[in-house]
Image 1: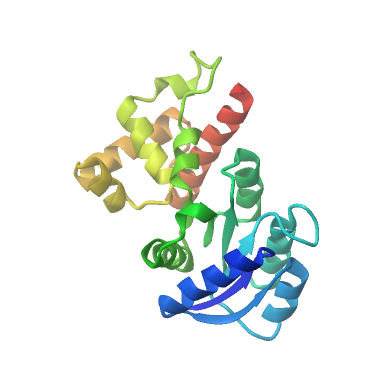
Image 2 (image 1 turned 90 degrees about the vertical axis):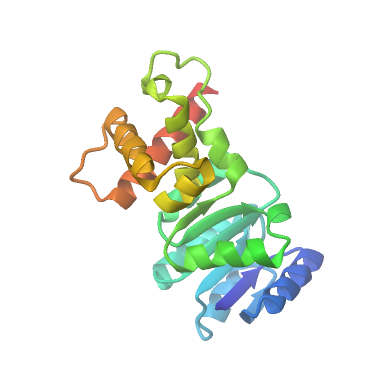
Length: 221
């Protein structure tokens, strides 16, 4: 896989480069800021670009750079890395796109297997969200005891949490030790309770379900 990297922390950047090379990926280039990454990718195509969220040209330069890259290279995957799992970052990331995009903590991608799995899923068009943030999304917000969130069963909340991580139905089934058919029934129930109609593509209903929880989490704080 062809990968480009923008990270202003020299030590982390070099460590990530070593991991990528150890995994057999082709690193087309690495930069310390977003502007340089945009210039690099104008001549050296990549399958996935890895961006530090907080880097030049401004405090959240990775997000600004990603907006430019998604417009210039709509088929390229984007992986955001950060020291922090922040809901407001995720909201902005999902505004950039809901396909071939991911948000992971830096400390969690420190192995070849985890990094490669994340990149592979993004390259295939999935959305990948850090599990700790996905779990936070489906925790019931304070002050919303009567709303739609409270109507989900514990198992449905588990299913939605794994959906938020970007897992497929088979992946959810394996995690919860149930059949894929059971997962389909839970997802159908979630869609119904969240009033996500069948005339919308399933992928977008999955994203809308996650966004519903994200907004509820934010409003409940």
